[in-house]
Image 1 (cartoon, rainbow, N blue to C red):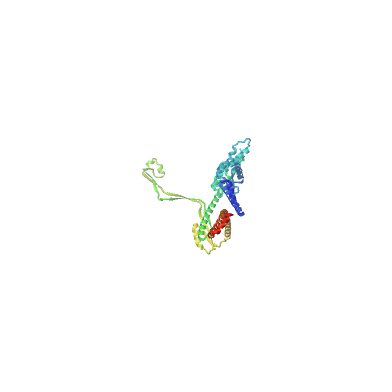
Image 2: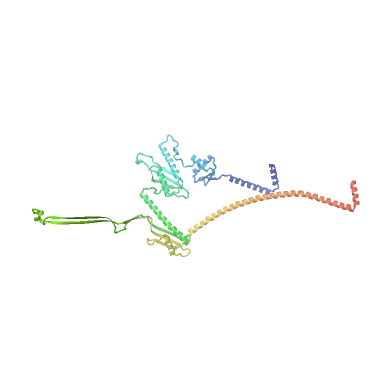
Length: 509
């Protein structure tokens, strides 16, 4: 089919249409072409993936300029904090940006790759400080939960006099990921990194904060006894409060199941003993003991006794040995027994954190009617481990609750829910309107096509009816001739003489 045939056929189809049909056809054709154009754009558009997220405006601007230089298509989302590029080019573009230094953050020890002549000592010191800060920043952003970091160092100049030597210090500002929380061991790790990287830096001179102003380096690595004592006290208070919260949650959940939500309030105060005690006790397991050794000594002797009667006369005798004689004997026995007594020695160390006393206060709402206070007291006592011997106390009372604030919150939540429902409804209406518009467009296309077919049928019928009309006229003339011929035959049969005379006249003419 040639273009001329297509044009001729289009004219044949277009000319029979009236003005309204022509306008509808033009609108439908334009709508179809626009839909096809946008559909082609969507199909041909490449899938975009995030290149970087959470960017600062300055970093985002430098990255966008670099992407324009590289002729890489990009999209900006989340108010300029996210940059997207075609998914197939994400890693390649990241490598190119990293090699060009457009990712921000400055330069580390790359500053010393190129030697510069004529630098002063001050310039070298500043360059070393900048490089060290950047290297520490690169290290800190690798920690889980840390999105960005800034490091500021104070590096005193070296002096030959100790009294003039300054003190190094470091300040770190961290930007954490959403819903991330830096643990104390992470803060200690950051402190250790800084202390190990900066000469002369002490843990007490390290200051760590986050972008919300929370101090993360309180008493971190400090050797001051007062600071250590304060830290231990804070930890004990936190442990006590956590224990109280746990008991309160247990009581609250139990009463919510029994009385219903927001029908009771429970508060618990715990007195914990954080003193560590050590007890050493020794017990004899065999009081009689076991004989382990025995030592026996026996002595005996005999002899003659020489000497006189006591007094002066005997002492002045010329021969004292002849004064008098006698016999003597000596016997001694000594026995020594050693016994070993079996003993048991026990050392008991009481861990800190024992419960000295518990106090609980429970208030139950009596809006729905009177409350059996004794039953509530019994279940609360069983839930918190009530011990009367150590002086625990439980107080349960009932009163009417003020639910004005709760009603206000419920109303605000209802309004928020209604707004959300209205937004969803508007979305549904928009989707329904789009669907209806699409249906109307389809119906219009179908109507136009049906009308075109109807017009074609009418044209065909007109052409078909035009030919049979001529045929009908010819048939009527033939019938008239046949009728006349029949009449003439009958007349010839009835009046042959008259017919013969008439024929003679016609022949003569």
